[in-house]
Image (tube, rainbow, N blue to C red; front, side, top):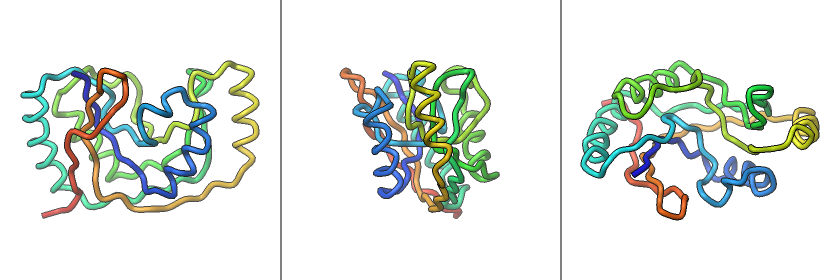
Length: 170
């Protein structure tokens, strides 16, 4: 089974992200807007239960996370992905690194760049048009998140929550 670890932002930000995703992200119907803490990896159910126990321990070491989104951004020219840029914080980076250190899945292909994908698999022209328009818009969003989620992928390709972990220092 495929698993992944994500943060879901609040409803207001999810609604805003989805207003773009339904047009520009072919994964719109498969998973809600999210910040990926650990990219998809293979594990069986027993491994997932062991991982869940470890994630529970990790969650107790971290306070709720502040999310600040200052602008729209893009991974172009590496790929034509448009996203909400999540300002990296020490706490979020430390959480990502603690999860990554558990050793599940492959080593991360890219540096950790917290973001919420709005569009992907766009042609060069479509990317240029859409991103050109979005980067002129003002974006300044702040919120706190107090949980992250271990997800698993269903047979139809959609993702659902396996377990939720509340952030809160003991």
